[in-house]
Image (cartoon, rainbow, N blue to C red; front, side, top):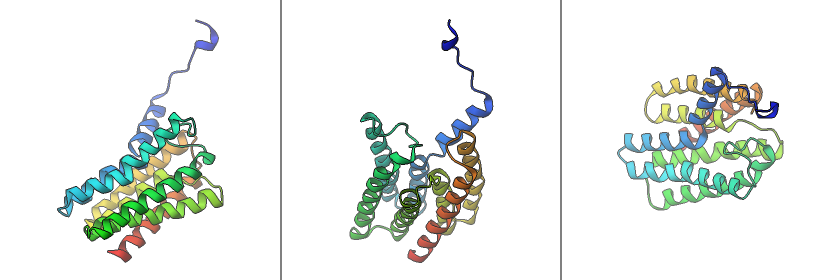
Length: 200
């Protein structure tokens, strides 16, 4: 084995950080929380629909971008790869929200989708106009914690502890600065929380 073949083994801390980043990925959190909210309000079919719009389709778009070599990794760590993706996700989210409204879906599910749309729009402005890579991981985690706290129980605010862990993982892996994960969490919580409260 030559020197170029030797790879330093990942430390336990690195593996924990990577696991938290994967578990706390926006598409994962969106799928899980959409299903939870749908089941909690007695509308599991709408929870599944929102999960597809907010989680399955976005991840599918990312995978297509990776296959076409337009996106380097499934967390879209390069800011220049985020602009077109954000535009596509905004269109998908708008389409899902319109569907919820015209089919008279439960107000909680429409509010959940609208809250996500507004939070995504705020993050898009910061990312594409100000060219600052705000963390979508912490934005989504913090945002859904606040929305579920309003919709279901204040116990969901404990999700902020998970948000902190996700933020740590993103900084540890070198994908974001502390400022980017903190701002992402605050913007996600405020934008999603306020919009959901106003709508529902």
